[in-house]
Image (cartoon, rainbow, N blue to C red; front, side, top):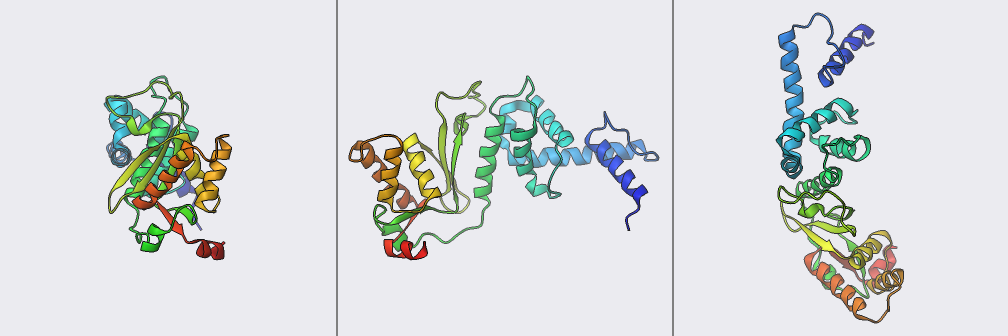
Length: 259
């Protein structure tokens, strides 16, 4: 059975390492050793997050970035003990827990999420490419679906454009819709979507049916003509993403049997 006294000392040490200004260290530990522990733990988190979020680190700058990491280290109750999963914890902290500071850029939570999605796809295991049949079935009569290595995203800020030379202070007038997908081993691409394309891909992701039905429902959502230029634009989008391998298309009889 764990020693309650040892557990108290362990918790006191953990509290001190995370927030030395608020929590005193356990008695009997040499100050020099405490300083080594404080630097070691914090620097590990600082370096790990810096590699996982290079754009965010560069954008917020060398003064705010260490404070941002220090706040996370001090305030966030991590759900995982594994360093490689700290990126998800950091995104959750920025989006759900952090009280905005005056010096914070308003887009940091969305930019962190965007970087995490790209990093996750970049490091994902390789999958089999769509079969020749899935690349050649007519996407209108067949049943299109997003490949597992594609993410449909929506943000208030144009996160794909944010960098050291572009730091927006307020959201765009319209949402930013993005499709992030793997384009081969260790290669990730980002496609900017208009609202119609985003809605079409969202419907494909949510409810399997033929591409023709998906287009019909999407146009209906926007109150648009069923046989107009936007219908033809949607058809081109289906075929283009099928060519890129972002959409796989099942033959009608195969899809009907599966569902």
